Amino acid sequence: MRSPLRKQDFPVEKVRQYLEPGPIVLVTSQWQQQRNIMTLGWHTVLEFSPSLVGLMISSATHSFDLIRRSGECVINLPTVPLADTVVRIGNCSGVSVDKYALFDLAPVRASRVRAQLLGRCHANFECRLYDDALVERYNFFVFEVVKAHVAVSPKHPRTLHYTGDGAFMTAGRMISRRSLFQPGMLG
Amino acid sequence: MRSPLRKQDFPVEKVRQYLEPGPIVLVTSQWQQQRNIMTLGWHTVLEFSPSLVGLMISSATHSFDLIRRSGECVINLPTVPLADTVVRIGNCSGVSVDKYALFDLAPVRASRVRAQLLGRCHANFECRLYDDALVERYNFFVFEVVKAHVAVSPKHPRTLHYTGDGAFMTAGRMISRRSLFQPGMLG
Image (cartoon, rainbow over the protein chains, first blue to last red):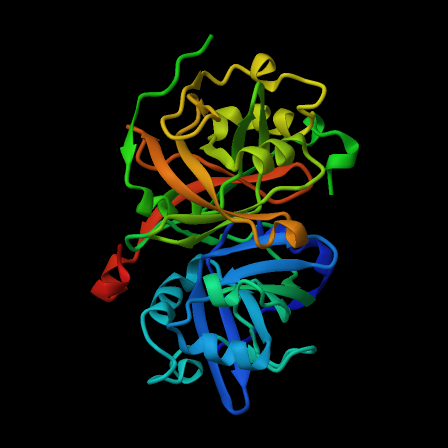
């Protein structure tokens, strides 16, 4: 049993710092006694405040049902050491497998939703359904991030960015262009 | 005057290879005689075929008006050498500045839309509006990629991934986990 990473609360209106760069994420869900984990790459930030994110969750997945019914999920941010697990989670179905038993991700109770936080992920964003207007047409859910937890270190997590065909781009070095920004455009 | 990169046609159902990793993009637009370029980081893939992508385009921008009126745009994929330009484009307004005159991006005529391709970007995706159901509520446009052009090299472009506060994560090394995928999950 691995331990969860040490986390601190993080302002929900700043989750773009972790989601805008486009990482693959692990989405946890729970409805009644059923829970599941899925790998997801199709998401976008939509608004700072309220903190809105859009997720395309395929209706062919078990997670879709749990999230549709509960109106909740947690977006978890895995890093390079979890690459194998990220792929394995995306290549089995929660209908036939208990992914919590199969993968040692140190689940932790969330504070605002029933779905659990994956303690070994760098960050965890608790989400409540905000708008389902595009769920029927595109499986596109608009969620509000209601609580955010981020590991105390490192500052720049080595996230995974899926490119298809089994290949991931991994987060490289950071560059700053702060000096070229107008003050109102920062933040 | 810089030359455009050498490009080849690319299958539109595979643009996730470039967009799913979450790069910052430059969006070009044209309506009647007005054209503009914007920097955009809030987007997601929505479907392989038809090739659908969702873009959050702030209604406060000049580009919003041109795209709303024309129902078209081009998503251009800049890389690290264009970092300064990406920031400068995002920090001025097309209402007061002709960004095509200010920035030497080697514009090229598109084949399916009136907005232009930025020749110095690694890839260019010509888009037509597919669904505006969420434009009023979230400034979220669903576009269909109708034509894609990608530079013949390099295979893995060094894209820019915005994290807020003037800082970008740059694309790092690639890792493959192909062997862990079920055959039907690749592609």
